Length: 66
Image (cartoon, rainbow, N blue to C red):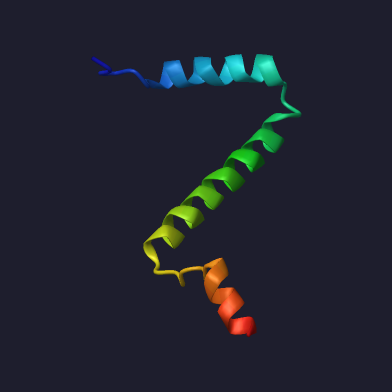
């Protein structure tokens, strides 16, 4: 169904359209934001696998104050 979807000419056409829409000045900014969002997504995904301390409930905090 999607065989040969991303051929080099298709990618060049997509890049050209993006350049027309955003202009060459915005592309570095867009790339930076995209990179930061991917980095934070990977960080959040890897933190999900690590065990975390369970937050104390309100009742447990009240008992500790007494």
